[in-house]
Length: 163
Image (cartoon, rainbow, N blue to C red; front, side, top):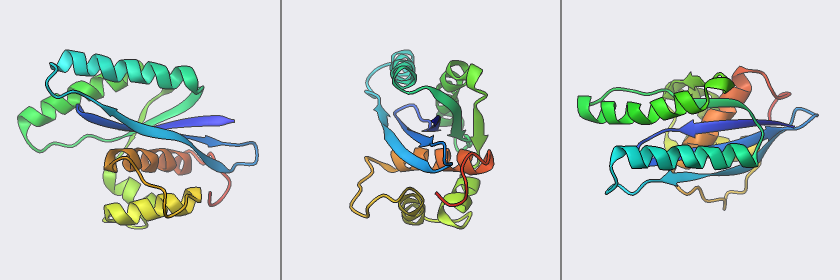
C-alpha cells in the first residue's frame, strides 16, 4: 500500500488528505480533515500547531508522497503570512520530496477544466474516489487537499487507469 498526502496550506485552515494506492493500482480515500488554527494566537503558535498535526498524520500513515497546492500572491502582507505556513511544510516534508501543483492544474485533472468551479472539482473527487454524493467535505480546504493528492497520483502515474 502506498500512501499519498495532499495539502491545501494556509495559516488558519490547512486542508489535508491521505489517499492510498493498493497493489492493484486502485486509489482509495483514507482520511482527511482541516488543521484549524485559533486566529487569536500569534503566527509562531499557529505554525507549531500545524507542525504537530503533520506529526500526528505521518505517525498514523506511512506517507510516501506529499504534494501541496502552489502558493500565489495577492497582497504583500497576506502573502508573507501564507508563506510562513509554506515554510513549515517545506521543512517538515523535506525528506518526502514535496511537490507543488498550480490550482489550474488541479482543477484540470480533477474537475476537467483549468477553470473548473469548486462544485465541479468536488464532483470530480466524488467520481474518482467513488464517494457518495452525500459525502460532506468539512471545507473547501479539505476537498482541495484531496484534489491535490489525486493530481499527484495522476502526475506520478501511481495508479492504473481511472480510480
